[in-house]
Image (cartoon, rainbow, N blue to C red; front, side, top):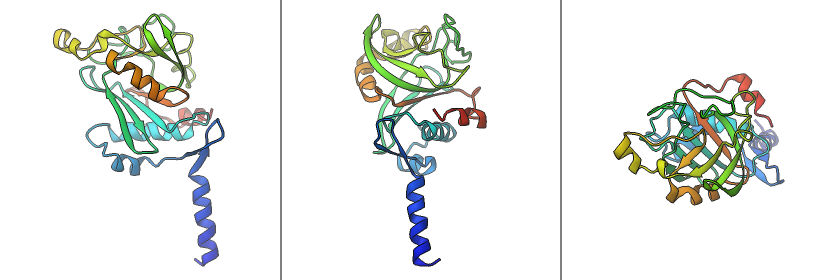
Length: 223
């Protein structure tokens, strides 16, 4: 390959690796395998879950932060299963316990719904919106991005908020975390920090073994 062709290939590679945030600033298209190794996530986040999260993250156009939060509902509530990841700086910002809906399961999250008043968690990709103060204190609104899977999240008031029942002390007395009405409840002492890190159009991916990132779901994420 001559120098001119090499230059064109390099320029095209750079072009294909950069997208644009909704606010007009550039955002990188991240490579899951490289990130997984560089962030030393082995043993912390399952590789297949991370790949699905990053591939979906790359597909979503209207985000404004290079922050991906992964909630792995294949794990029991006795484990930290929420991970807030700064993909650009290759940092793990937070690891946290997180509750699931009371009708989703006991120790494990097993049943999911997009229906109002189901008191179940919803899976899939979400975009964070603005924080507010409500009946559960400092909370964060979420927009569900997947039709039929979580797109009723706003109507259902599915948010991130702090709760005493999401504190790990609950595990000692109950054998699991307490449960929500479908919201992502986190320990009270971490609530403000987590919300402030992810607010304003970052991406959350909520995983369970029942939901795979199919071609149809992937295509629908071009929002």
